[in-house]
Length: 156
Image (cartoon, rainbow, N blue to C red; front, side):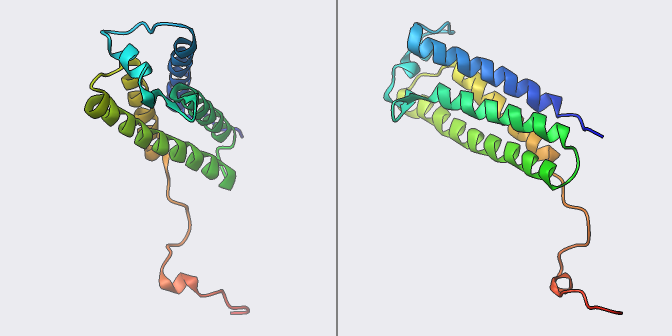
């Protein structure tokens, strides 16, 4: 029987995808609708791209991958594949949270301006990470003690 995806992660990933897509559009096409002047300052800084690729494009890729993995994990609710898919969501959201924390540090400490949309994305990826971390489960079965490392014996 097919499982259900974590709708919280799916919804947040969709929201993050929309925010990142908007930031990418605005990066290439024009000014950002933002509270204050911070978004324009951040979007024009040297920190808004990595090797010429806007950070918002990396956000699109990350949120799309999380969305795909979360949906696939919901379809495979049991077995090792589901666990690996969920671990993928956890890993991507962890790396996104760490990267967002670094970018938020740059906004406040180096650029001295903050982008409302960037903060919204940082909160979104952190919420996904929280849900993914809460969904991690320990594998069923015997505990991993030193005695469980010995191979089973035959016949008795």
